[in-house]
Image 1 (cartoon, rainbow, N blue to C red):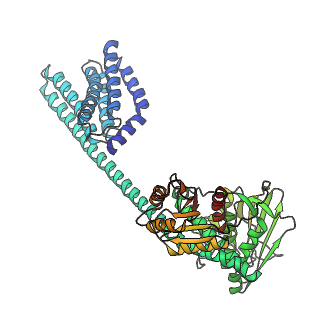
Image 2: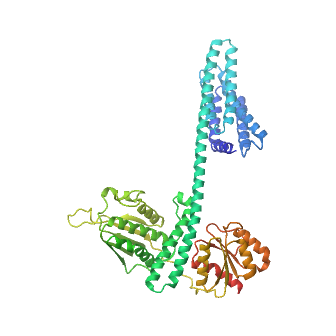
Image 3: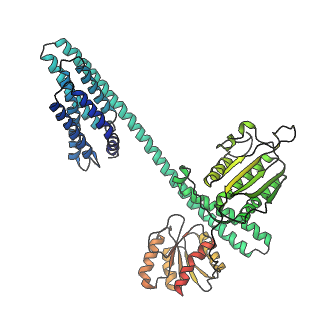
Length: 549
């Protein structure tokens, strides 16, 4: 069925151009045939061609074998009628008539071995029609005058041409079959890769959920500001990893290099300081000093994609660690007109002139023995340009008469500055004292994270490891809200929710779906995407609490 569908697509794609060339061919035939004969054969060609396409459309030979047989018969009628017209011209006693006839027959054979060769029976039936007409007319033309020697030579020549056309048909068909097979293998491999990445991403969410949740809890209860700052960096890094997992799931965007840019109001100073703090220990371990200088005109808030900005800054600082070697590395940031600029300068060996642009290509490194894959600068430039800016290597710094190489490297990131929209009035963080929430998840780590968050919000957390236990817990404890994991062995989250609806009817409490991927079908009162965060959980619970009041 797929082969016939492909054949139909090929013929449909070239239908108008074929019709134009056929019209030209029949128009040239007016030099050797009367108008009425030309019109009759032209009309037959149009009818057969149209009927063939109609029969091939959505054709499934196993379901409609009769229609399939008719498609082959009509297709052979098309080639027969097309070949019959030049065959009549072959009989005309004119110097160019035979050349005209021979050219059309060869064009027909080429057409059968190419455009109609996706489905070999279609090509074979068409070639059969052309061959029968060509051999029949040639035999009749020479036999009627008794020229048996010419008949033998021309028949042998036609037979050789037909045989060669059949060999071409077979070779082309095998080539197309091999290409289809390779495409199918590649498609299966791509699906397997997609399944693997999706499964790996799903499995990674469990430990990531624990890292984010428990780190957030530790940050909120940390005894001093320094501990809170360390935990904040850990939480932010884990959240960035979670965002990258979201991109991995969107394989079509990644393969098309169409990474999503999601601007929002960000703390610009905080984003830059977070990136610097994240690399502080690495610079200390290398005996290097990392300084930060934020210009007075640098706005505190901006409308940008904070995750992508941090990704660019991290790659720039990572590059400075690898190539700066020693001494001071300086990050500066400011505002120039309507553009933000961030510059990272080091005192390493610099970038050779031949590599000043090549280092922005994938897998190209500044030095052969340097660590890494050579992707950081390439990715950062691509992200910067997608955000409307750029990442460039500034001209080498020179001292009077000194060699520019060895004076370090300066990378400049520029982004358009967009003032963030006016923020809505802040709503005080709600607490959920006395709220009883049942967490249903087959993974104990996920239940622990959700329970920790709920306790931080003042709610009481109940736990159930599967759907059956959840039904029992609901009957006994009567929770106010249920957090339901969708992917569980045995009863899934959706099935558990349906059973609870039958058990309790109108008394069913709000049920919020929790999943790692797509939103659930209808019936749930909310949807949380893993990994959980305190903000996501608070936002999901708020309307449920309002409905209970």
